[in-house]
Amino acid sequence: MSVKATTDSCLPTAPPAIEPVTLRRATATDAAALALVGAATFLEAFTWMLPGADIVAHCAKNHTPEAYAAYLAKKDTRITLAVTGVDVPVGYAMLTAPDLPSFDVLPTDIELKRIYLFSRFRSTATPVEGLPGVRTAQALMDAAIADARALGSTRLLLGTHEGNERAIGFYRRNGFREAGTRTFTVGTQVCCDLIFAKPLEAVAR
Image (cartoon, rainbow, N blue to C red):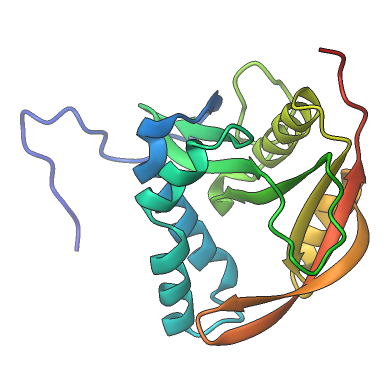
């Protein structure tokens, strides 16, 4: 079913051929946008492996405006938001204090808890404002690494499902190496995640 715009509407009738992306720091007012993108991109990423009911249960618990507001209120959280059009959110990278109970976390570690981006914006055809030739996913990763260094962290950690080969390849290209494992529950499903680590040199402050 198509939707017909009213005569006084200024909405476009078709998507543009190129949708440039801008990166900016997320603030407390972005909690609802982050929840929406987090849930939608999680669904897009894991439809191939997880039952729908478990995805919905996971997102209902972890991707809520309240959850993101709580993260943003913490001093060691940094979230870089990718937006297009009139500030429409399409992805983000989120740094937090590590939450890896089974892993030997060091005092100067920080975790890249999430790095999400809708698939349509992963193409080389998507320009990132101020970063010619850099893909959006790489720009988000670069921003997270820069923030981790600025916070004085000496190691960046992340966890990803052992079957997520696309993501694992991306992390390895960015200097992450396998450092351990963890179990991760999505709804009723217990999944096995790999933990990756990347050494960092902190910047002088």
